[in-house]
Length: 165
Image 1 (cartoon, rainbow, N blue to C red):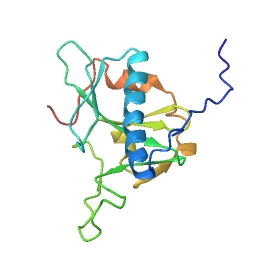
Image 2 (image 1 turned 120 degrees about the vertical axis):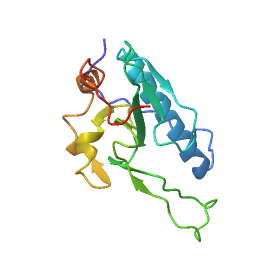
Image 3 (image 1 turned 90 degrees about the vertical axis):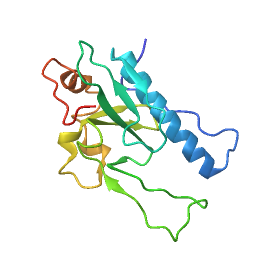
């Protein structure tokens, strides 16, 4: 029987992939974990195969309603970034200006934060995040942690995405 008090930990990079490559692979796996968690919770969720897009997945609420755009952000630091477009690593030119931007309703309908350490998900409606700055500590997001009811509310019959697709 599963014990809700036990913290699950992932095995990490036992093959010794170089750090920069591993960060990319880990981010991709966080996206897949987030999508899988949505599906397990009963939502029709699909990955969007556009690298560096403003959202990573869509949820189809059915009945001809608009798709819900989901930005998935993995974190292993205890804080989730609410920005996109930033790049790092030795392959990135330091002479080019950063293109970091803050996610808004023009970009996505929600942010799904995935704790890379254990797979916990935080369902963050984009409207709730707009006054938070560029990042937020997971410890301040307890009311969003595993709160799949928030996602159910976003895909309910009252759903009205900020922009139509």
